[in-house]
Amino acid sequence: MDRGYTQPRRYEEYAYVLDFVERGKSSTVRGRQGIIVTALGEERLTILEILGAENSEFEVGEKIFIGKEGRTKVQSVLGKMTYERISQTAQTELPEVVDQIVKQNENRFVEYLNNAQPLTPRIHALELIPGIGKTYMKIMLEEREKKKFESFDDIQNRVGLKEPIKQITKRIMEEITGQARMNLFVKR
Image (cartoon, rainbow, N blue to C red):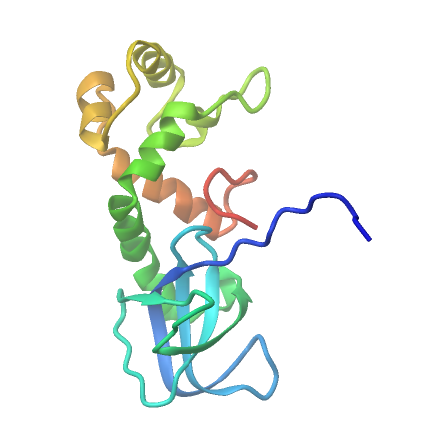
C-alpha cells in the first residue's frame, strides 16, 4: 500500500564527544548502563546520549562515528538530550566543540549564508546571527548577488563582518541552550 512519498529519516554519521562516564547509567533509556557518552551530532547539532562499546576509550572533543554501518566504538545511540540535562563538563565543552564543527564544516555554513532567506517580511535569517544587523545584512545580500561567498575569510574581507565563525558558534549555542526562539542550524 503506497502512502505517498515520505522522506527517509536522516541519522547522524558523526558526533563529537562532550563528556563520558566509564560506568554510567543512561538517562534516556531505562536500565542501559556502561560507558555513557554525551556527544553533539555534527549534522543536526543535537545533543545525543550514546552507549560506548565495551573497552572503548573516549576523549573529549573527539569525533566518533555513530552511523548505522560499521561502528567500532559505539554500541548504540540511546537518544537526544536537552542542554539542561547534560553534565557541567559537557556544558563547558560545548562552545569549543561547536566552534570545531563550524570550522570543519565551513562550506556548509558559508553555503547557508549564501542562501539564507527572509523568515518574515520584517526579519531576515541573516539578522538572527549575532553581529549581523540590518547594515551587515544589506552588504551581505548585495555582495552575494555579485558573487557567492567562498569562505569565512571571503565574508570577512568583502562584508567586514568580524569573526564569522565566532558569530555562527554563538548563534548555535543560543539555539542549543534554548535561548533562541527560532532555530536556523539546530534540528529539533
